[in-house]
Amino acid sequence: MNKMDRIAVLTSGGDSPGMNAAIRAVARTCMFNDKECIGVMRGYEGLIEGDFVPLDRKAIGGIMHRGGTVLKTARSERFKTPEGRELALEQMRKAGIDGLVVIGGDGSFHGAKALHDLGFPTVGIPGTIDNDITGTDETIGFDTAVNTALEAIRKLRDTASSHERLFIVEVMGRNAGFLALEVAVASGAEYVVVPELPLSIGQLCKQLKASYAEHRSHTLIILAEGVMSAAQMCEKLQDTGGYDPRVTVLGYIQRGGSPTSFDIVLSTRMGAFATEGLLIGKSGVMVGNINHKLVFSDLERAWSEHKSLSPELLSLITKMN
Ligand code: F6P
Image (cartoon, rainbow, N blue to C red):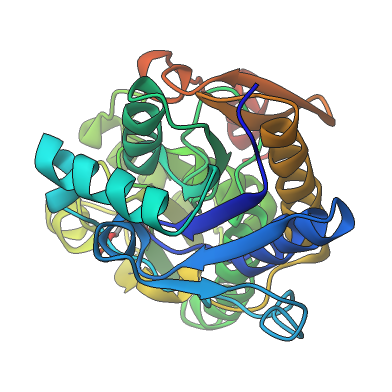
């Protein structure tokens, strides 16, 4: 097994609440095991440039409740090239780094897999508000993003109900509907529109008409950004049966804020598990939380295997309408 005296950690791709708690957990687990922890600034860009900081007790003090990532994040084009990867390996060799924890989404895991294939011990932690990673039930930041969206939608409901309006609320999620579906169930939305399911605008208009005729004071549609924009959808809904439609894009507020207790606990568990994994020789794997139990699975599963929306949650939208 490789020597594992100095472990580095980086965050990459879109930030998500809980990343700081995961960074802290990696650093604390290193300390507990008498190992050194190094933070890599700006994801793979910082790895190529050798932008490293020591993560001692002081550096990680008070970060666990903060949103964003103290290590900053970036999407690196250079790291996608063999030259960029060689430079990154060279920087790690020079700094005496023996293993790496990568916190991010599937794009970040492609990079982690490449390092593993080049013989460098690397373990991934899934961090994205999209929850679109196979191999884990939840990703770090998903729960906080759902709660942030819910808080905003509760406010929208108040005004929607006063004015008898239809609200189309666009949420993030990239090409997946996990965030939209969870938010829709949590907010009691009447409809959810996700990339995973076909959409019939004609059918939706019919349902809206029926709902208006039943004197429902307002209606809420949660729209996943991967389908179309809320403005485009509003244009397509020619006949809403009487409702006055309005559009809200929740946007980047979904990525910020202090993590929920769920995300802090998940991040802390995953940070410790990933670090302990490296210490016992794991590489090329990511940590997942499956049925409340932490497990390792191959990194490429994250993007090569399809993750399905929960049929139970989908059926609840119809049953509760
Ligand atoms: O992957 C997280 C995410 O917030 C997606 O939901 C969204 O589509 C994307 O990142 C936005 O990326 P960027 O920060 O590059 O605009």
